[in-house]
Image (cartoon, rainbow, N blue to C red; front, side):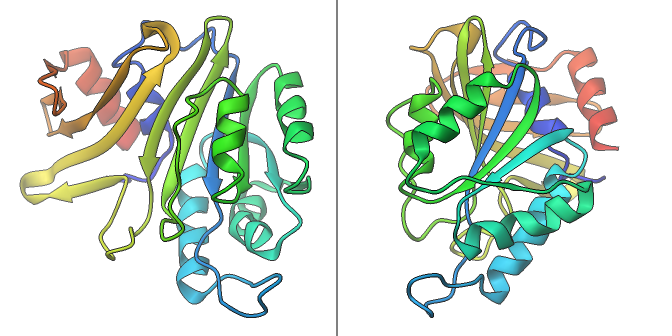
Length: 235
């Protein structure tokens, strides 16, 4: 099974929302990948960072990305480069200091999927400005956050996942256990369920069955149609 498709993540949102069709714009936000220490003013990616950038390209290559935004720093451009090359797009550079310009540009986009590669101190601000939660924090040691905002008439729906290797070297986003059991860790809030709604949990998917569970006691067995939809997405 190919488990890196972002379509799986978008499918995930339907577990807690009746319909995604009226959400005209999908915004995928992430911090740049692992960076070197030198030169201090504009370091490139490390080998681990370049590997993560390649994973990002695999994750997003089939997601219908129509625009990519980066800052003026090498680490954001290099993070986006493999994806941009794969889908034949030229990233647009907007200074990290011009967060409001970026937000206004995104708001003018009426449909499609856009990717924003920023920094640990800019992505949370952009998320909040676009209608997501104001509580997002990206620690300096984390490079695997993948945030998805769906923007529509009912507000912004927020989904936070992880991709590639985490800081401990373990695989994030989707992990495959014995017996072809696949699990996705996620957090989601807002959207059609209301901005007060917040869900953290795990989707467990097997060949012919699946379920959603969370630490606060939420549990639901996926319908046959949902399992079939996810199975087709993963093929």
